[in-house]
Length: 340
Ligand code: CO
Ligand code: ZN
Image (cartoon, rainbow, N blue to C red; front, side, top):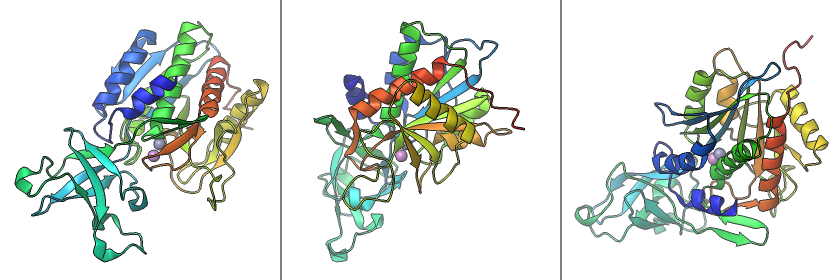
């Protein structure tokens, strides 16, 4: 699984430009699939299994895209100004390396005038690609780039760019593979969705959820932690198992789905933690509010330094996330309808 994480994380796939990563994921999942669809927004939708009498039509989702930057202006000396594609923070940019989809590399710096004491805003930053004028600049307005950063293992921890959400993508691929290759029984008709444009507003999840019209939705994504020096007051820590989302900035998980996830983890003796995230949201929100509404939950992989070029997860948490997902998908879901 580590080699798959390394491979997927290194492939560039900023929001709206998911073609390369989609092709790589497709190659991995195609041998397991009953049906593969790529829709108009580029979502890769993989159907597996049949809906039995006690089964549901279930949508799983992990997003293909990663945050990136888009060139907005090239000045007289060839410096490139840019805007964020998704939530790009200046603190994580300065000194960083980027790679444009056309292969051009660059480094990010900032207007010295704004000083080092205060964090400059994104419009005070620029990318130096080694050009001297717009004429010899290999990058033009509208070109997009992602962070460039090597894959590293630090003990049990994995560090690289784009773990948000390539780690979720790997968890879905691995769960599908186990269900298929080990011939596990699932009462459900499962749709594994590798969604597009999550970082710019959950757009791919919205259209694919409309298309699939699921009885239940689960997304797999990263969540922040509160376990770094003077970190946010958040009860999620690396290495303590997958986090089951209770709420985030954009949605409340269906409490019945949360209970089902927690009791499945307990039954299978998989460590887990509860996630309450203040800001940010994920695909599950878009699934929840599609059509007439869908009960949803979310399995989160704890991740430090989310949206930085050096996102960090614990490998044990990734393995336990796969175990929990496989356990969830192999079992019946307790009655969700008929509350009182
Ligand atoms: Co994100
Ligand atoms: Zn994400």
